[in-house]
Length: 265
Image (cartoon, rainbow, N blue to C red; front, side, top):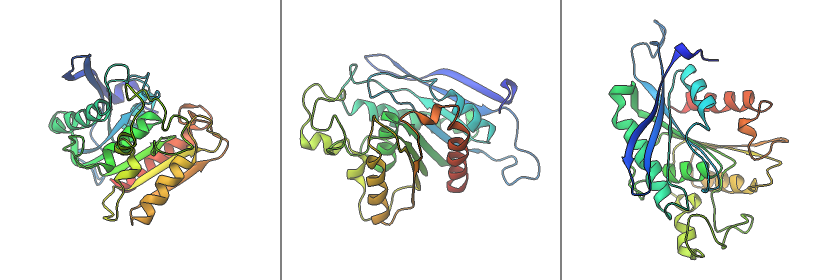
């Protein structure tokens, strides 16, 4: 576990001013150079961007603070980026904000000591939806940064699906009942094609998740695999929707995610 002196935290850096509010990012940088003799000594570090959840209705930077501190302890630069919620702006504002936040951090690679060719996104719940949408949709929503690895935890990936309780109904992302075209556009799974161009992806989902059906992750994993992409799917036994933040599941989840990122970046 990191000591405070091991990590330099840049909090509430302004990304951009929207009409609704100012978007910010927290950036966590290892505060010491890599050990001499290691492969990364003197080199820029890979970046991990965390996207918080909250059903597109709540949430803020800070939810992934524990994860970000530990990511920095593992040798990554970590960042949390904010985005407008559904009551502030309708879709695609949320994913446009996440993409701009990712680009903002990478544009400051020299300041934060980032390797711009080693960028991952990690999200939970609604944040997993946005993280995977950023990773799979190329430049559909304005993203300039290449995403090299993606991790989704307890995510919603097909908003058209019958097993998603809000599919076809009113969503916080829309003012009115969304059309089939709108649901398709905001579903990460619809951007999986036969080109096998998705980044390496890890999907984690609790077997006891009563908020988002585990089949959301299983179905996206199947689609990615069928298209020839590198994907790993873990159904976490006896875990609920927010297991990644629980004291019981956190150590194993942390090791699983960081091991995947080390191998993929």
